[in-house]
Image (cartoon, rainbow, N blue to C red; front, side, top):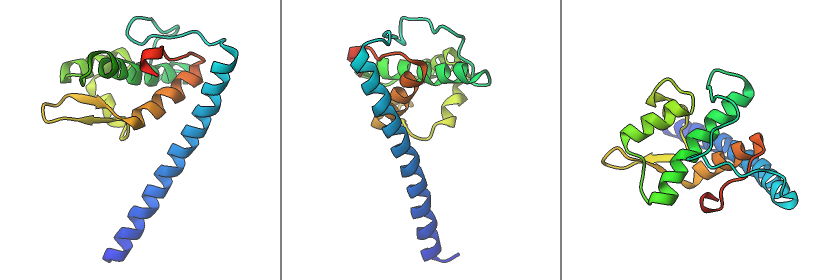
Amino acid sequence: MTATDIVRETINALRRQADVLEHLLLTDSAAINAIDADGAAPVFDPETDEPPVKPDVAGTREQQDWCALVLWGRLRAIGARQGRGATPDESREIAKAAGYQDGRGWNAWDLGWSKDEDGNRHFTPDGMIHLRHYYAKVGRALPEDLA
């Protein structure tokens, strides 16, 4: 494979990823605007509220959606409310609470978080795309301080 082929493959992969993110962003914007317009969606605080179904990565579609919401919501809450990333122990606990067997559940997500030199997991802007998407899917509203 030539250097040109590698560059073309990389560009194509990035385009596919951009298409997915654009689709999520458009879906999220429409859903969030609809929630804000009618005010019908109850607020769900990922730190203090219990999901109406048990999050499970291998469960029903609804359980999977809550799995993602709890995962992203709890990481966002630590960053927004405490101004820091989740420690490795907290990251494991978040993944377990979200329905994953252990901390390796984070490996299913390649966008939305980063790690610092101490292994602390930080919420990134791409994480907000995931978070808004799953809040819209389950029909809940983000707490104001996490939005």
